[in-house]
Length: 101
Image 1 (cartoon, helix red, strand yellow):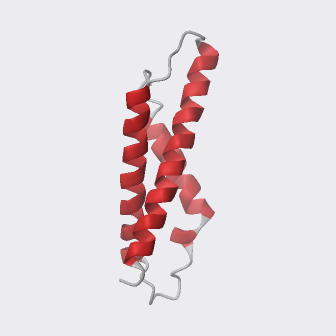
Image 2 (cartoon, rainbow, N blue to C red):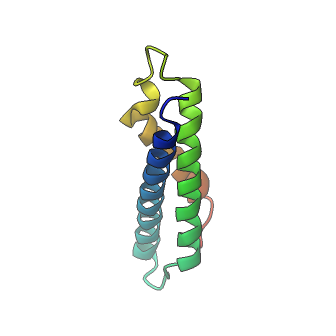
């Protein structure tokens, strides 16, 4: 696979940043509703590690689906649309069903 290491690293970085942003969005949303709501440090660490792992995995898997030899390689899976859809799905899956951060 061409650029395996680069896809792994980039996916991990983007996944980590996305996890941090999503966790903080969730925290401030809950804190606005309940001022006594506390920041869950260990849940935050878990979210960041999960984001890093899932980001790295998605960086590798998407390259398998659309390999560098494919004419659409820089298409859907390298788009902001895919990242946004994946981020929204992750937020809904992980944070909207769990109330304690």
